[in-house]
Length: 112
Image (cartoon, rainbow, N blue to C red):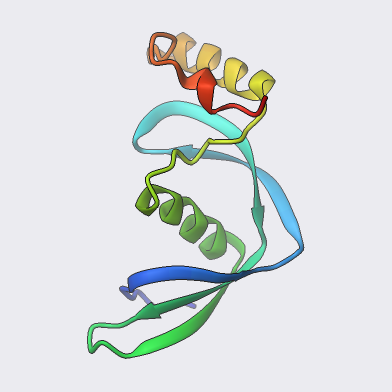
C-alpha cells in the first residue's frame, strides 16, 4: 500500500509460511540490532476511523513493521525469542556505541 492510514484493534489473522530474517532495530532500544525472522506476508483484521472492519494484506517491509509494532501492542519485546548468541552480540555492540543494556537482564528473553 502506498498511502498512509491508521488502524484500530489490529489482529494478525494469517502469517504466510515464507519468512525472511533481516537485521531489525527499534527506537525504544537505540543501537540494539538483531536478526529477526518474520513472515513475508500477513493478513490483518482491523477497524478504520469509521468503525468499519476490514482484512488487509501486507507484504515486505510493511508486513515486517506491522509485526514489530504488534509485538509492542501485545506487551512483548520485539527481540523475544532470538538466539542467546545474537542477543549477547547485540548487547555488546550497543555498549560499544554508548548504550549499556548489560544490567537490564535482557538475556531472559533469548531462546533457551
